[in-house]
Image (tube, rainbow, N blue to C red; front, side):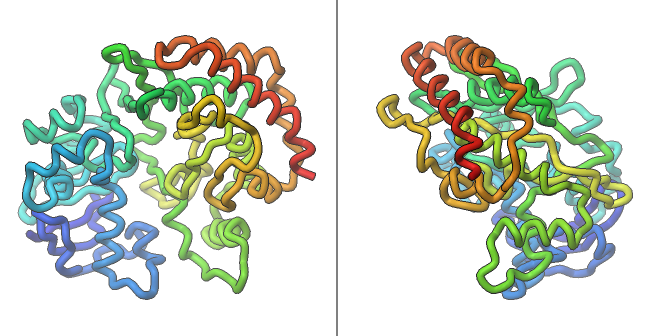
Length: 375
């Protein structure tokens, strides 16, 4: 079927898509090259234009590895995720791209989920009823879904058993970031059937969009033996993104403190004005749940040689790339850190006090050794 990729009411490109499998058969015409997704503009030189668009589409959509979907999807032929995403016109709450079917007479104002209501229920239920919504074009492995509370678009996100610690970690990170004065997305805790879920609002609106860091990785070529950190900084500079080195470094330093192992290139990025296509800054920090030894037995909790992303495999090595004093750390006194961790973990029946105390002690050890780790 023929679709036009739109950005709000601006046509971007016309393309032929196999709806059942989400395959891009052909790019028919480019309407606005400057409005193409950045990962398409700066595509891998070995990929065709069709391949780069298809990769971008799949990255935006629900992965087949999404918690709770694997068994459910076996009931369908083809690729139901891609099919349902197109039935929802590819709309989400992270950007303003959408797919307008040939002959469609509607505009952005009529169909976008920033202004128009949607049912807001778990994805499996939406699949069953084939109701449109933003969740089909929402990536990530953990169970989550968008809903509306008091006219605000909020994301509910589960944790992974048996501890279901990630939602608690999001709230802990929120409180630490607030105290430290670091821009971030606000998180709160929701208990659903006795299990913790995190809740946060969308951090973009009808005039802004989120550009994941991965979309700029091909802006400039890697130099021989160039460190990923240095290459990324050059990519930002080439696009004149108004983000200081210190902002990236602060993110990495905070990840070191909480031992966040999942800061991949999709879990941080930039805010861009959709109308002017100008970058406005770094996106507020979000997705801090895969931290604080969330998947470790209490006997495996230690501060050294913990995994890191995206610029190094270990936290210590990544921290050294920042090369700056951790000024914001002085705002976090030990009592506040300890009380925050123990209090928030105490709200979950899946986490016992012994684990909470061990994690609090370890974070304080990391905090008080951080300046030494930089040297």
